[in-house]
Length: 205
Image 1 (tube, rainbow, N blue to C red):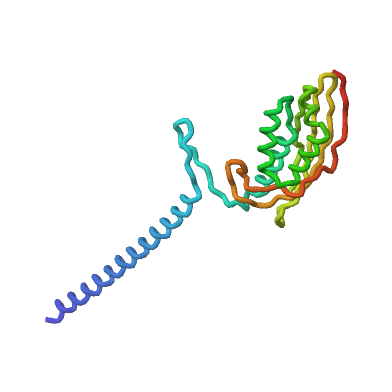
Image 2: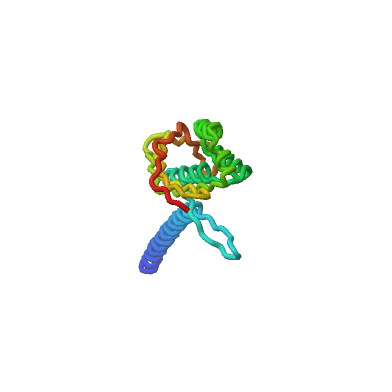
């Protein structure tokens, strides 16, 4: 008489235990799925896909702090290339100087005005002089803003009768500003000055 009752009670307990295990397993699986979804979403936000020539290329988004030294060095190098690369063409000089002045404050404008007033720019145009710059290295201290920098470069001045190689060393500071088409790195050069601009070699042509 009591045996069927005991069997039902045992079966009920076994079923209840099974249901608890199933529910617990479902909760664990759901929580794991939610965690993985959060991780995948975070990783997806750091990836950007760019379509190039019909192919999707993956690029990674990083914070400005991670690339600040690289961007700062490139900003300084780009400014010097624009400011010191001169050809005997008034419009070409005006165009490159205009681009350079977007990357710096009034200290660069003052140096350009001094060159123009001294007749150097006019001499480049009238003498068919070409001036090329090679930036050898840029040192930037990114520990505290404004960031101090020093640029080491070599100038090659090509005249009709000779070519002159000069050593150029400049220094200044970098201040963060808003990025724009004219200033893609978002830096502004301040208190820029030339420390050295001396002849290394003169060769006849």
